[in-house]
Every structure is written in structure tokens, then in C-alpha cells.
Length: 65
Image (cartoon, rainbow, N blue to C red; front, side, top):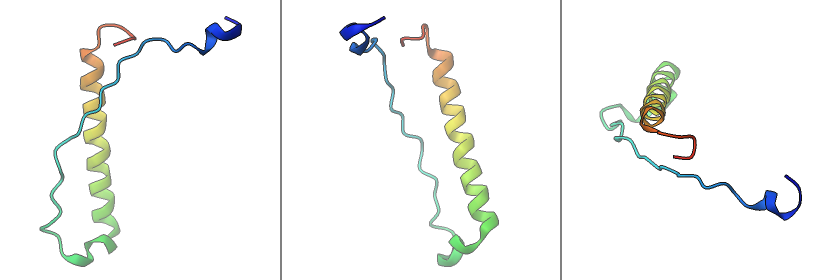
């Protein structure tokens, strides 16, 4: 496809989903210095996002939405 036609975007559907907050108020103030704790929380966030993406992917009927 050449010319101005290639500038027209294909229709797409976007979903913005917010997950449940991860409570951190029960950790001490210096918990951010605990590398293992930060790693575990980051891993939990990654896993949650991956599950949300997979769930939305399974709901999709076509590549356009």
C-alpha cells in the first residue's frame, strides 16, 4: 500500500483495565531497601498484568477487537 492510504489507521479496539491495588501499608517504612521484598512485589505485579492480558486475549473474537 503506497501513498496517503497507508496513513489511515486500521480500526482497533483498546481496553484499559486497572487491577486491584496491592496493599503495602503493612510493610515498615524502610521496606523499599529490602531487595527480595521489592523483587517479590514486582514479580506479583508482572504476574497479575500477564493474567489480565491473557484473560482479555481469550475474550477477543478477532484481531480487531
